[in-house]
Length: 338
Image (cartoon, rainbow, N blue to C red; front, side, top):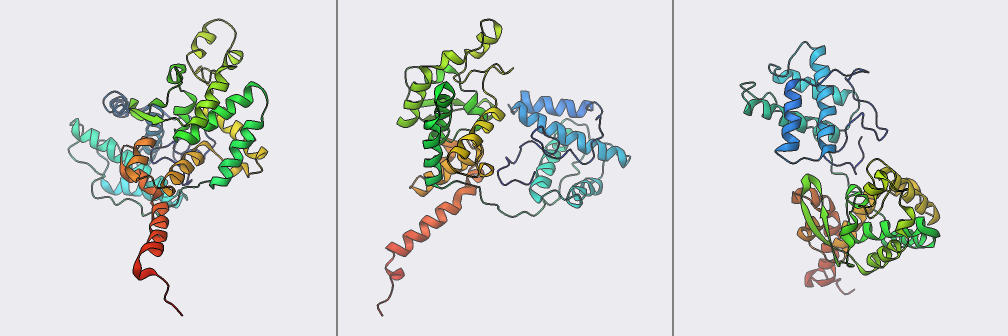
């Protein structure tokens, strides 16, 4: 849960990615309260939050509700001290400050909703300080390591190899989120586009350039793509809409499926597979762009970050580049003659 790659609103404890179960949720959590259901519906319908985000908030709220029941408290009347005790209990259990802050963010939005709806007259989260946390740097691969990974992808034979190469080339060319990548519609690459129209979080659309190597890899994959389609029927009809079709319920390659494929590519490239993931490549894309002169606002637009603060985790790259620039160009930074 403490991974620096975790999205600030990513899946909390108990998520299906193998993370530990929530601290206070019983084996069979009770049904959501009407307040929680209304809040989650508002998140999806009014704010356009992704379903995965709503599911994450739901798990956090189940954990919170179990804690309140143990204290004999109710969300509509819980005092600030009890909310503070809940956040403190997460720290005592060993959850990172980052994870604690994510839980508090969920509670702030939930109690703000109750206040706005007139379901309580105050907000018990007001005045609570966020857990202090460090600023972990994103994990990235070097440019040489990415080159080795791309080369390894191209050496795989058959349709699976061409698909893997296309996935990897698109990912490193665009910095897409893995969910955006695997769910790309077939129409996104119609007529060999130089730009991809991507639908991201909250159904927001953005355009990202598609480099020549990625376009070449996509063309090679499209030549054999139909061989991977399921048998005729409703499954085939659903899968045929996607660039990377699959027999999975979604109709396209799953995130876990691609992550496993990426581990295999890492082993072929002689890299530690534990260091390679779709999100690490997204971080690598952003860091390498900045290292080669891209500005922070441009990278923000490419990544689809709503807030520039999210993109600022990459400023360590800018710091290094600016320091090097000053040392090489500023007259007072020149080495004095012996």
